[in-house]
Amino acid sequence: MLSHKTEIRVRYADTDQMQFVYNGKYFEYFEVGRTEMLRNNGLPYSLIEKNGYQLPVLETWAKYIAPAFYDDVLIVESVVKEKPLLKIHIDYKIFRKTNGDLIAEGFTELVFVFKDSKKPARPPKFFNEAMEQFF
Amino acid sequence: MLSHKTEIRVRYADTDQMQFVYNGKYFEYFEVGRTEMLRNNGLPYSLIEKNGYQLPVLETWAKYIAPAFYDDVLIVESVVKEKPLLKIHIDYKIFRKTNGDLIAEGFTELVFVFKDSKKPARPPKFFNEAMEQFF
Amino acid sequence: MLSHKTEIRVRYADTDQMQFVYNGKYFEYFEVGRTEMLRNNGLPYSLIEKNGYQLPVLETWAKYIAPAFYDDVLIVESVVKEKPLLKIHIDYKIFRKTNGDLIAEGFTELVFVFKDSKKPARPPKFFNEAMEQFF
Amino acid sequence: MLSHKTEIRVRYADTDQMQFVYNGKYFEYFEVGRTEMLRNNGLPYSLIEKNGYQLPVLETWAKYIAPAFYDDVLIVESVVKEKPLLKIHIDYKIFRKTNGDLIAEGFTELVFVFKDSKKPARPPKFFNEAMEQFF
Figure: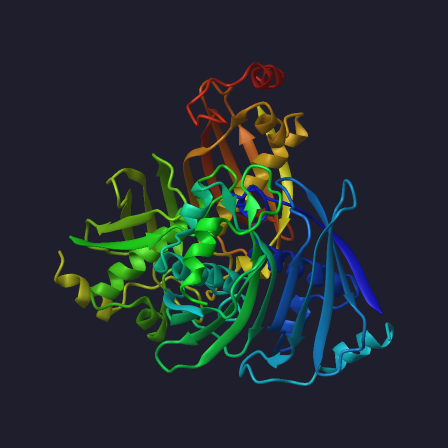
């Protein structure tokens, strides 16, 4: 299993007039979560692009359990439970740091494409090798 | 059944360096879709807030089928298939106007809350009455 | 002089917890203003990119005069007062449609670059020719 | 003089198809810069709101000197050069951490308003007292 926790502080720009974080903003938080998970395990996403690949999102889901407020520090927990074959499935849980409240959960499913043609690609060798240690 | 189609033109700001619309942006498109659906059926969301209610998103999902590009005109089709009881479930399909390509599909589930207390509320009478005609 | 008016409806996502549009959002509204001004005068920005150029923003400024609220329809007036030589200077005024209130004013200064090298470029011939009629 | 440096990592969502950070995004970076400057000097913005005030932006300006790329770590330097009387004028410089490149500069001018009425307010006593030590 591959997992990682990272922190994000809610910006004023992230809130809407309902006084908490806009629902669409969480997908940026998920992005930060998986980016830091990959970086922390030797696979910075920028390296993936330098190797000629990209990882577009195929599908995503979020459930909003409690509101996140301006200036809250959130903990984004990203988890890859199963070894990625074609798709990479990442689960997220977002907690409020001060009190541990579960704010939201969700997932994203990503797939490798060739950067130039945008055609689907198998996960490249360097990615599979880096994954070996976790599964 | 309640349904509506509205158009959105993709802004430069909506794209990312993958050269198409960022995955998190679609949730704004869904917002525009349901806002225009409600307005078009005599229920502008601003009226809902004026009556002391809000409609936060409880859950959302999106599947990305084809990329949307800068300056594309998208058609957002919003549909409420079943009469809302406590939650309002809205399905979306997004098409590229020029060629009819299906770009994405998704849903959101919303619930009424009292604007001041943010506590869950039953759908107010004026909302139920407006819904009567569609189900 | 080249000028154009276009309409934008304020999304929920555009507001923040101060209950009006976030200051940074206006730069997207300016983008929509100049995009529609160019399109309306035979120069869709996508055509500029297809010809191998891009128009990054060099400098921008905004003054906020009155708040814009959720669901307001805004009129973005974009004006090019002087024939562009190297830089393109565009002035904006944003009004609330219902009552004509001046909401904000601002400007952006843009410059042509070659799309591939990102090096500064002189305005291309097709752009200069399209500008001829206005100055 | 009051000044502070804070770091921000560029998200994928911040980029556009020009392959660098969208011009409007810098105003969020400025927000983070001033938020952390205030917090670091005993004046978290959330405290200002708790005391019944808000600080909307009156005017803002940015000059883009070099592109910021995905995953860059940026240093946002925020400076208040003169003791705020009615308006608070904050200057910003944004640098790329790896090589010290100046990416952008800008300013924002903010003013206190009463949170409930949104009417202009003089800087509250607790704010003035906190400022004393810097000027």
